[in-house]
Image (cartoon, rainbow, N blue to C red; front, top):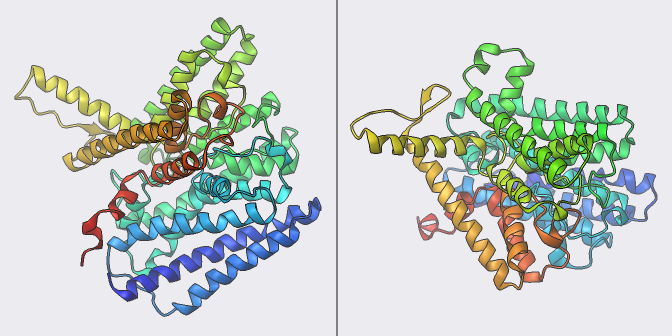
Length: 485
């Protein structure tokens, strides 16, 4: 790697730090409005972040191009680490947390839109910190990806390599470098529009503007942070249904949403396989949840329908918002919700997990292998949206699935070695790797990760990063061959 490439990378990180510092400064509004005593701390954190970002930007301003494609992977990994490091500052400076490890856990959870928290009583946090937590998730849900893609031409990096390096927001079964710019514009338009629409909807439904802004930020980004200690359980039924709609829409491919809202029916017709699977698995799981809540746990039909529909949407889209104390629920229902979070929403959405597209490919590949057992000489290519899927893509999906599974198992083992019991270790590993957030036991439902040891918190923090970048990007950077000339 050339020195000029490293300097261009630092320049780009500087640009992103300036963006983060600008967002941080917006937290001065609630700090001053509610007079919570954190205005000075937030102001200093914002100025420091802006200063460091501007220094990098100006110092390496003439290095505008990166020639080495490997730098796209290094850029994405460093970007998340550096932005998370600076996101810690408001949490420490305001006194919301006095423990760097806990603050780092919270910051990574925010920027990766995981939603796991170390704060048992969220409602006791200063208003500026509450907004910062919400803004981290809104920015991390899609904002960082969009900024990287939008600014990448100035670095000379191939946009497709960046698009696949940050694969959490990518449907890489058919993207090309040419279509990426169009995808960025469409995604940004839909993301901003949905944010404004759901803020207005919650406000009309009787929610205070402060709560409406924060909950929209965290649910439209599939994040799950809340301004209340009981997540969204204290919201009215109408507000909970609106939030469920926000979760489900954020789990849909944003390009597909753009085509739908612009009435481009012909183009939509070729993209419905993944959407049909997404809606189908949600409907089946929601029916199971409603039936379980009513017949197994004696919920009235109205409550069972609402809680089942909302909590299933939260699990499938890996949002992590909680509408009831799931730690007291029937074990098979908890298992179904955990399985939904592993599946995740559609590719090209803010959701985490494996993505519905990859699950479809895995299932259809398995079906094809079974058919070949009966008809060894038959040629039946795997199809998605009516078109053949190349063996290269199938192999990539298989590798991602295996790496995801291996990482999950290692995470569970690592947490147990850190002194976490098996139930919590499974829940936390799945919650952090998939982006769902809440785990099982004390870290599930309305609980938190506050009781986790420092080694366990650091391991969960790493799982969040691995899950957000879908493991492969981070692992590539650690290969010895990556650093060779």
